[in-house]
Image (cartoon, rainbow, N blue to C red):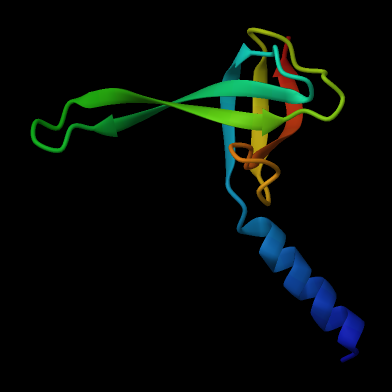
Length: 94
């Protein structure tokens, strides 16, 4: 087995560990930056009823292609600025 085959398989494993989320764009005012709202439903710790948890992500959008209200897919990446830790994968619905 060659060294390149080992490094390629290791790189593939590292890529698959990155988190992905789907959410809605709530702000596109920044240059190459959008803010995405992701809603998760989790059970209440005491009562068990499903409640919504809303998380806002600052996302890098290199081509400024996502607009307000779009449904987008995002992926975790290295820190790009003080708040940006995610990048835009694709716009699912305009």
